[in-house]
Structures are given as structure tokens and as C-alpha cells.
Image 1 (cartoon, rainbow, N blue to C red):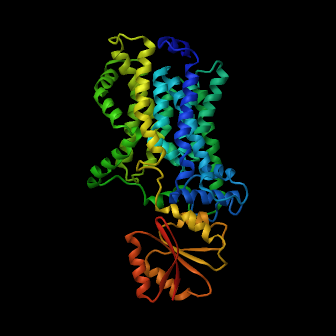
Image 2 (cartoon, rainbow, N blue to C red):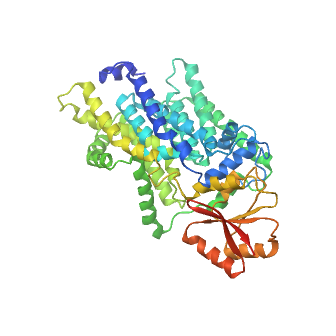
Image 3 (cartoon, rainbow, N blue to C red):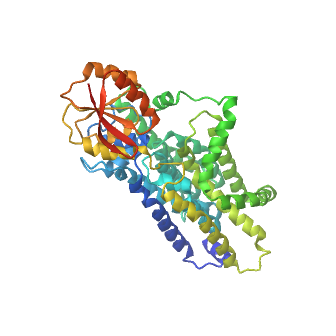
Length: 499
């Protein structure tokens, strides 16, 4: 490995890489830890956390009674975070992803180092991963994507190291480990399959032999077989993939009139990857130099740059042209690779202009690294307060936790009607005696009340403090029902329904 050569090239002391990794992991933790306790659950987060609690309390360990459309690895890891009958604090379900997000910092640096032996590219990539608003605001969440991202990066690190071990046996073990980790990524979310071509390409760059491929495939097959057996043991009718396709409404190419709006939406989400307009403008100005070097030079590092660039372009185009939802979390698995490519961008542009700069080699590295950190750190701090319109932000659902505590001791027979926050209510009321009833529209709510309303059994209604609640209030009033305010918290009001 070219560790010594790279350090000598930049005139850096041998301990610098360790200090950089430790310092940037600490920085990543600083900007992420706050979100663990600040933001309330998104509806999907609440659903996943409910599944984890059902597993943890052994009420439904195989989720046989749930309509599950995601592979379950995250839910079982989350379940291990919950002691039996634990307090339903959201941060418990977010701990695995927070740990995965912090692990992503050294994993990104390691992959950059394995591929290029370039210290500047590795440090720059770590800075981007540590401070990127896209990665910061998703770190302390209960979505499947942060764990998926870390496991995919770990599998790529192993794939890029498979022929670099000090002995042949260590390289073989890394090939098996890469396959096993990729299989675990597939057991986290099916989108991991999109990264199979990149694994194959890296394996060719590392000159895998036939035994390496066989071990890699064996590693993949173990988690995939376990996932299939789990799905079969559930006996829940439609399989995971079929259920996911049902939720999506199937996959299709976009219509012509969707092309421009989808492109605008995806580009707006990608802008949160860097978060610094100054840095984005600087990169745009220097981009011609980088692309000229990619075309002019023909060597292994350039070929790897071209591979990463082509994969990222393919990833973006696929999500643009296939009619999947335009969701910010779909960008997350590609973000560390984009950070590595950005690190290479900085390294190559500096090498191009470096000869003309009358500065010591170490100072030539220190200045751009410090400048990038100075430009990205404010974005990371802003993301710490969830100021970007991505990931989980403080929303009107924040009051659900407060009202859920109000209803914890409600008597058996209590009914709570809801249309907007059912996932969150289910999480906070999982151990209560409250029956949660979702209604599709005001007429459905009135029809249920006409049949089941009993003054001896409390019936509550949760409405957002927004114009969307007005039709429900008007329909109840016109049908002879009144709403008495039980408690109002920011964003949501709890009413008791009476004749």
C-alpha cells in the first residue's frame, strides 16, 4: 500500500491520517448528535419503529401480521436497542443509523485510499461526508437508507481491498466479506442491487480471480437465502418485492411531460449534498479543468475517476427516467461516492495548478482542505438544526408525542380518530388501551360515529392546525356532533367528540 509515498508527497507527518479521521468523526458526531433528540418521527420512521417494537416485545417476531414491504435487517437491529417494554422514545430507534452515519466517515476515507492512495482526496471526502446537509439530516433517523449506505460502503471497501491483503488468504477473506456485506445491504433495502455493477467493476480493477468471484457470490447468497426463508416463514401472502411493487404502483418509464419537473426536483435535492453555494460555484468554475484531465490522461486513477463518474451519472439518470418517487433519501447511498469524486476533483485540480504556486507542499494541501472545511461547516451546523428541506425536520407532528402521553392512561374502549398522523400515533400508543381508527374522509368518520358513538366510551379526534382540518370540522357540525378541545399543542389539537 502506498501510505508512506503519499505522506511523503504531501510532506505530512505519519500521524496526520489518524488525527484527521479522529477529528472528522468527532466533528460528524457533533453536528449529528443533536438531531437524535430534536426531531419527531416522520410517518415512515414511526412505522419502522413500530415493527422494531413488535419484534423486541415478541408480539410479532416475524411481522406476520404486518404489511411489510422492506427487508427487515434494520428492524431487527432496532429491536435490539429496545429493552422489553421500553419507553417509546424516538431516539432509541435512531441509534443504529447514528452509529452507521459515524462509521461512514472512515469508510469513505478508506475506500478513497484503497482506490487511489491519495491522502488529499481521502481527507476532502471525509470533510464532505461529515458536513454534508444531506448526510447530517438523515443520520439521526429511523429510515433504512443510512444503514444501507454504510453497509454498501463497507462492502465496496472490502471489494477494493480483496487483492491487497498481506497474504493471499486475507485477500480471499475480504472477497467473501464483500459479498456478505452486499448481501446484508440487500437484506436492508432492495436498492442495494443498483450497486452490484460497481462492485463488479471494482473487482475487475483489483484483478479478482475465479476463486474470488465464487467466494463473493457465496457471501451474497447467505443473507439472501436467510431473507427468503424469513419471508417464507411469515406466511403473509404477498412477498416483500410484490408488496413493494404494489405500493409503488409498479415501475415504468416517466412520461414526456414529467421529464423537466422531475429533473428540477432531483437537482434541487442534490443541491443539499454540498449545501454551500460558494463551494458549489467554485467547483463549477474549476470543472472544465477536471473534465479535461479525465479526457487527456490515461492511467489507472483516471480510469477509476471515470468509473465513479459514469456510475453516479447512471444512478441519477435511472432515478430521473424511472417513475420512482422523488424522495431525498434515495440520494443517500450515492452521496459518499460523490464525496470521493469531489475529493479527487480537489486533488487533481491542485496537482494541475500546484507547480505554479510558490508554496511548500504541505501548505498547498492545508489551504484547500481548510477552505473546504470553512465553506462546508456552516452548512453542517445549519443541518444540525434541520434547516434544510430534506430528511427529518421539526414538523407539526411534533405534538403527537405530547398528546400520546396524555392518552397513555385512557380507559379501555377509548377511540382516537385520525387521518394525518396514524403512524406516529401507533408508535406512541402501542402499549396503551386506545384503539386507533383511521378515516379516509369526513363522510367515513361521520358514518362510523353514527353507528358506534357511545357517550360512556371516549372518542377523540386529532386535527392539524391547518386549513385541511376545516372540512372535517364543518362535516361533523352539520351532522350534529360537537368538538370539545381536550388539549392543543403546536401544530395539532386533540378534541373529544360528543353528540
